[in-house]
Each structure stands twice: as C-alpha cells, then as structure tokens.
Length: 414
Image 1 (tube, one colour):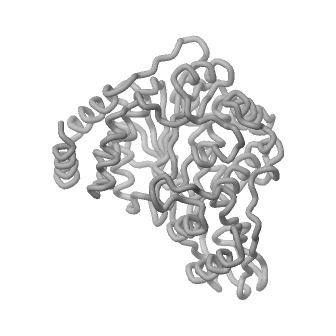
Image 2 (tube, helix red, strand yellow):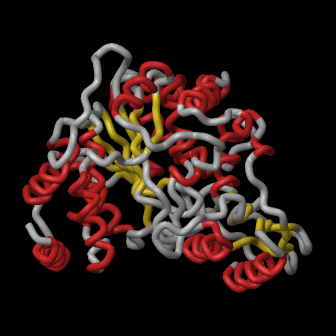
C-alpha cells in the first residue's frame, strides 16, 4: 500500500472510528507485521505495564524492578519523550553507558539474569506501528482511540505477556484530557488485550498536576531511586506505583490475591530487593551503577533558583501541561525530531497541592543551564501557579479502576 493510501486510511479511521472487532483486526495486523516473542515456562510469569504518558511520570522506573523482585519477568519495551512528556528511555539514558538498543537475545539474557529489561522498540518489533505513527503525527490523527489502542496493544501483545496493567491518565497534562475519553480508551485496550488471551486491567489517574516531586530526566531518575530506597516517597507517586504493581502480580499469577500481592510488594520495597534489582539491571545493560547507588552523581544543572510563596497561603493549582512545556523550554525535551536534550535541567516541587505554606517558604526549585533560563522559568511558574486562602482538597491520584467486563469502579470503593 502506498503512503498516501495509508494516510487516507488513517484519516478515515480518525473521523469514522472503528468498532471493537475492527480495532482487534487492526491490532493483529500491526502485531503480526514483525516478530512475536515467546518465553520459556520456567522462570516465572511474564507481565508489563504501560502508561499513556504524563508529566513527572517515573512509575516504570520503580515498578519494573519492584515487580521483578516479586517474581514477575518484565520485557519492558519503552518509549521516548513526546510533546510535553518525557520518556522512560530518555530518563534511563541519563545513566552513563546504559544500553537501551536491545535485541531479543538481550531480553532473553536479562530476563534470565535479572528478571526484567528496559529497552526501545527494535526494528523488527511491530514495524507497521512505527511507520503509521509517523504518518499519524503529520496527518493530525494522533488522538484517535482505535489508532491509540492498536499502536499500544500491538507492541504489548507482541511481548508475549501473561498479564498487563495500564495507567491511563486524564486531565490537563494528559494526551487524553477528558475523563470519559480516558475511560473509553482504557476499555478499548482492555477488550483487545483480553481477546488475545492477556489478562488486562487499567487504572485512571489524575494528571491535572505533575506526578511526584520532580519533572526532568535526572531529577525524576533520582526520585525513582529514592522511592526504591524508601526515602520519603511522595504519596501520590507511591500510591499509583503500588496499585499497578499489586494488580500485575495478581493478573500474572505471581500472587494469588491482593493481600498476598500487597505483602510481597511491601517486603520488596522495605527489604531493598527492588532497589537491588535496579542496580543489577543497570550493570547487566552495561551501565554504570554508581549514579544509582549515589544519585548525587547524576547530572546536575549549574544554576538553581528557589521560588518562595508570596504570602501565607495554600498551594491550590499547578497545571501539568504548562509545567511539562516549561521543562522542554529549559532544554529538557525535544522541540524537533532528533534534537539533543539536557537531562540535568528540570523542576522540583518540595510541597504538594493542598499544602499550606508560610510567606517566603520555597515551593519550587528551578534547575537550569544558566541564570537567564532560570529567571524566565520563574516568571512562567509564578504566572501559572494558583494560591488560595482557604483549605484545598487534594484530588485522589487514582480516580477509577477498570477490569474486563466490569462497571467503572471509583478508587474509593475499589
């Protein structure tokens, strides 16, 4: 099929949609355009996690070693930054020497030796998705639920999984802003996964504000390491990570029920087994484990600028999309394809939404290449932050949980 014909097909799908059966067919075609992985039965169940992308989302960096420490093998094929969001591969490549250009033989070895691997999409892995994605970008058909479903699920299904958990984000910083459309996307992906025999569930998570305390590659990697070390993790980040990890253990059969999954996850975090898995993966993928064992050795921006609260007030709002774009403007993201990124720059938010601050108390720290960039970022942050004199309720990180054939379950009753 000629490129112009594919472009026309994408436009037709974007405007007319696909029914569930057609979405499954499209997913199968994309999946079967390349190699499909299989794994030996010995060694434990195989699972993975996918996020639809969000600002400050470093969950994969924590979840993969955590679940590997609990007996799940994870052949995690990850992506790079897109728009205002940073990618897992870009964060990983902050580690000196770490290889992410993995082939199937590398995944075989890493799953045997470590229990998980984190690399990029190979040239023979769902190649049709790669070709159509480039066309979707230039034809303005990115935000189509059938096309998003086929793109994500063709790659995940080709990994040869027993179970899959999906973190479907909605809100200001998400690619799908409306909660209703996020639910539609989650159900579409669950339907496809289950139809191919992969147990699949999803959680809907809030992306009105950044996830965790940091935004920026080295800063997010450092925060992920600190979570694995048990060093005062940000509650919303920990909540999302543990919820996904527990469900993945149950879906893959690594744990018989949620209670046992919760115990295993807690022990892996508190006992240090999850952190040890991350160090082992870095070594096995030829990276230098030094910056993981001592995160202060990660790249650091030469200029730091604190921003203080203008008065005694409650931190009431911080739009995630603007924060993500600001990090791109600091040099921490790509504005054109192939552009080099500065992995040291970014933002740290020591206080969370709903916290009351005293006048002059720091609520943000800018990590920039120079003073000019830092001052520009300060002006942007001060223009987008919202303050309140009254208490502000902190929104839940997880807004719903969705399983195959289920009604929407609010997080409070899950």
